[in-house]
Length: 222
Ligand code: GRF
Image (cartoon, rainbow, N blue to C red; front, side, top):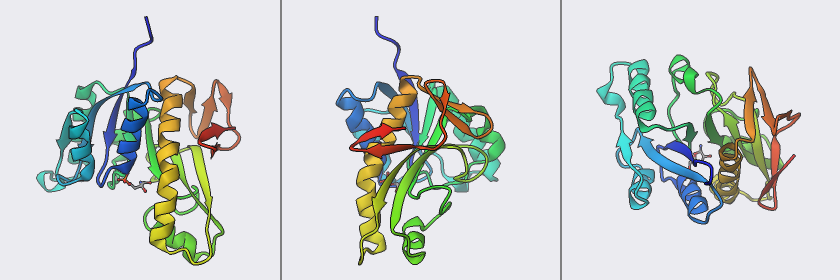
């Protein structure tokens, strides 16, 4: 009998291209997970429609229905717990989550962020890389902790910044690599090869990483 598949929940606020990349990888047989729920804070998020089209249950929570961020997040995690998810993926979820509410999920919750962390936490990462005159940009998948975009980085994809790149071109070019990076990291989680070693280290196959894994030729390398 084959091992049970990892049960994964995804949160997304926007178009959902990273969610779509995960679904494509699963359908191709490359990602041994079941998506148990997709949640959003935006009723019109493209990600919700993508999930429905793929037969994945969805829910929306609207911030205006809650008195505080903490109340929102408590309900969010109540829903996620009820879904039976073992791992939570933030794929373009544009809300800051209360540190106490997320604490039971530390070690089984990852986020994709469009910068080479620790550079450019927060918003407008492509613009900030261009304004800084960087020659290299990238995306990071990291464990989520109470510190915004500050949890241990598992893996990164790097791209060169070309002369004449603007924010939109850079974001577009990077997205292709995000779509390889996120499924590759989630595959390692599904294979139970990754661990967060508190407070801020990542282990692969039981061995501490000295630096994030790198995406090269569509594969993660040490
Ligand atoms: C991606 O650039 C991701 O890195 C960031 O938000 C964007 C989401 O895009 N966190 P999409 O909704 O997955 O297309």
